[in-house]
Length: 145
Ligand SMILES: [Zn+2]
Figure: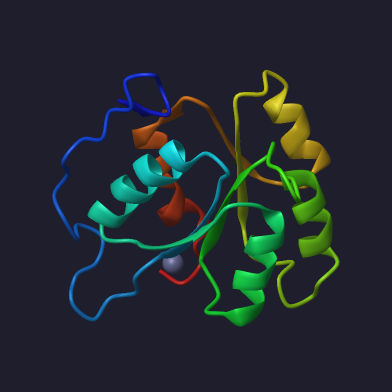
């Protein structure tokens, strides 16, 4: 199943599967300028029991990160107005308080693997986003579990 495709499928998934009582709840910062994708990905992640923070560009993402709380991972679109994903990544890497937060770049760029390497990012998701791949990321990226 995919989100970000023209049909914009948002499946109904069992709520709070990843958030049993008292357990660590993954917090995800979603940085995406497309409101459709923000809503689709945000809905899927929220339904799965994750805490989701939203930013519309890199500049807003930096403000959110500096205001806290710290997310387990950042889903980062590459092409955005105001401050794009590359500029955001440069700012993030130069700030010791933020540099270690795992970043997953999300883009339709056909050279995404290469872009991820350049940006020093371990994971990437190609648009349209595969839901199984998306939902597997918190467990792979978060070291709090
Ligand atoms: Zn976590």
